[in-house]
Image 1 (cartoon, rainbow, N blue to C red):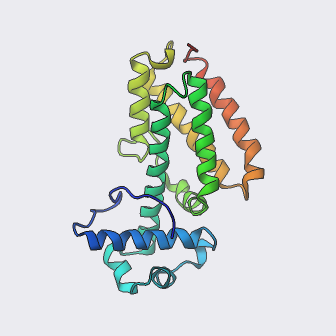
Image 2: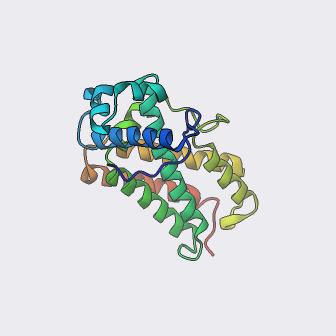
Image 3: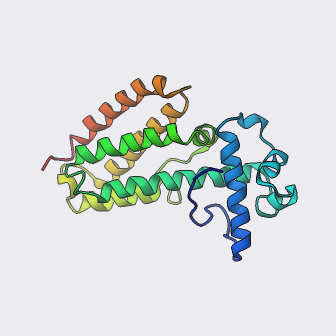
Length: 212
């Protein structure tokens, strides 16, 4: 089973009973394990049920459609990655300068996609329908809010711009990087694109952030 850690469900109410929560997690893990090695287009609730050792009806109890299940797994994965990025932002002892944090964040993003192979097909499936970060209830809005608040208070030596605009633009560039990496067939082909977008983002932020 996948080592994916779970937060409360992102797309629906989390079950109240512990047994039901474990069942939902088993379904999500079985789906992730399948996507790590097999093609998404061959996935079915029958395959998931067999891997999880449960009846197919148990899947439909929590996820009415296969797309509902895939979206929940995508949101869980995206949330896990965001939590890791927030931890880097907060760790100013390990990463004292904004360039240090930026490098660590982009490295974490790239490695997460490489080490969680089930995330790549999910990202490719949903990124075309992903709302812009300006939408209030977007999955990435909390990251924008965090950066906006940090920079509005002068964090990272912010100066000379609108913190809200710069925060939105920064996250959009990071999302474009994530999407471009996901569409590459392997780590070797994604590396030069990752390097180019890293250069782009660092150059952009250098206009507004200062080194200590």
